[in-house]
Each structure stands twice: as structure tokens, then as C-alpha cells.
Image 1 (tube, helix red, strand yellow):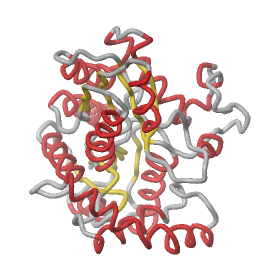
Image 2 (tube, rainbow, N blue to C red):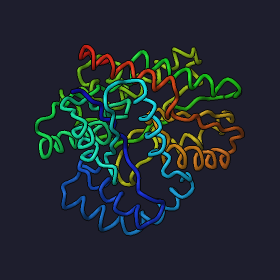
Image 3 (cartoon, rainbow, N blue to C red):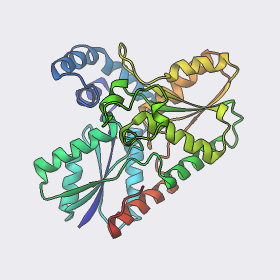
Image 4 (cartoon, helix red, strand yellow):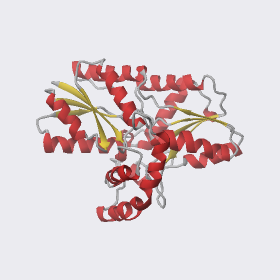
Length: 343
């Protein structure tokens, strides 16, 4: 029997330092997030970051926490419920980090008789610290606890025609009544070395722009290329002027080169160039979360206005929109009937 496993990032159980600390520990101790030797990662995470970060992160979570709980969890659950109504297969939801574990989600599917699973990492792009770690963790749980299960993984869908259509249309609806000077596509940041580590050729990725526009097998696992490709596909679909669209990368750790340009630097630069009406999109995520709701919608707006910006609009993620659910339903149902995955 076939079933679907949706996996998103995860969340602490509450916006308190007590619950944020173990969540951050699990997240930051993941070797695909901070990819240093374990002894060094232990010092960085448990000796330095976790001494102060849980309190600050808890304060940030508290700003965006809903009555029902974590926005990312609530939105993922709503999406899952809608998807269940459009397929005959069992659908389970798990999180890479936190108490809603992948193991429990696989157990839920097994209890319903599922032995063939379509794994859906809820990330449009391939990156070590998002898509890849979901796949690796799921396969580890399968080998340890569910060896009889067969698992097929949905590929990254950053350039899928149907996904680009629904993403573009959701953006168009938000831009319809906003007289913007510029549209910024702000993607989650990753260390530059992750790009090189993910390059199967070990020579293509130079992170200078030229490699992303030169066809290569490396593009299948190159997060930077996929972000720029998605941006261009959306820009083209919406017929946005080239000079009014750009890409940046948010969230980074200090003392380490991450993908540039940095989003917070762009917030300061735009007003100086006369771009004082800014729309910001966060398409590395399909569900709004701490990064989109606090870092971009709140802090980003403050940074932009402090630098002289006037109008600022954060465009929500696709979340549980019917159009996005419909696309996912078509993907999983096609897989159930014919084994075909979207391209």
C-alpha cells in the first residue's frame, strides 16, 4: 500500500528558552547544518551558541507564536489536512527537528498498512542543510525501524512549471495593490562551502555567477543556481522588469563566508539608491516560519525603514493555499497511479 510522508523543518514546542534550547541543539548539531568535525561542532553549539541563543530565539518565537501554536507547525498541519482530502492514500506529517519526529510519522503510515512511501521534503530547493538532511534522516529511520518500507523521494521542485505558476500567481496577487520600486527574493542563506561540497564534479561551482549560468550536472544539487533559476522563472512569468528584481540571502553565522548578497545589507542599500518601496518574497520556504515572520516581516521592515525606506511589503509563503495543495495533490496522485514524479 502506498502513502505520503510530508516533512518540514520543525519547531520548538513553545516559545520558551526551556523548549527552544533542545530544539536548537538538535538543529545545530546536525552535521549537515554546521558541517564541522563533531568535537568542534560540540564546542561551537553547546559551548558557545546555546549559552545565549535560546533566550534570544525564544523572544523571537514569542513575537510570531499563534494561539494554536507554532505557525510553521499549524500551517503544515493545515496543508496536510487539505491534501488528505484530495488523495486516497494515507498522508503523515513529520518534522526534521523537534517532537513531531519522522520516526513517528513513518510509524503512523506503517500502522495504516503502508509499505511504499513517497517522501516529500517541503523545500523547493536542494541544500545539504534542508532537503538533503531530511532524506538522510528518513532513510536512517527506515533502516533502523522500518526495513520493509520502500521510500521514493520527490525531487526538488524549484523549476517545476506548476509550482512556478502557483508561486507566481500568489506573488502577483500581493503586488497588485502595491506600487513597488523593487522586488527582493530573499532566500535562506547557507555557507559557501556547502555549495562546493554538494558539487558532484568537484570543480564546477565557483560561486561567482558564471557557473550558475553554465549548464552542468552540478545544478541538480546547487542551491545557489536553483535560487537564481527560480527567481528568473518567476520574474519571466510575471513579466517583471529586470532592474526591479534581485536576489539576496538571509540568516548567517558570523566569521564564515555565506552566500551573498546579504539581505540585511540590501535593506540598507536600497533606500540610498532611491528604492524606497520594497516588496520581499521568501521562496526558500513553502510555510511561513520564524525566518519569514520575524526576521523578514518584522526585523526586515524595521531595518529598511531605519535606512530611509518608506513602504515595505512582506509577501507570505504559499502556506496552505488551495492552489498549492492542488499542485501537490496532482504530484502524489500521479505517483500513486503511475509511479511518475514531477519534473
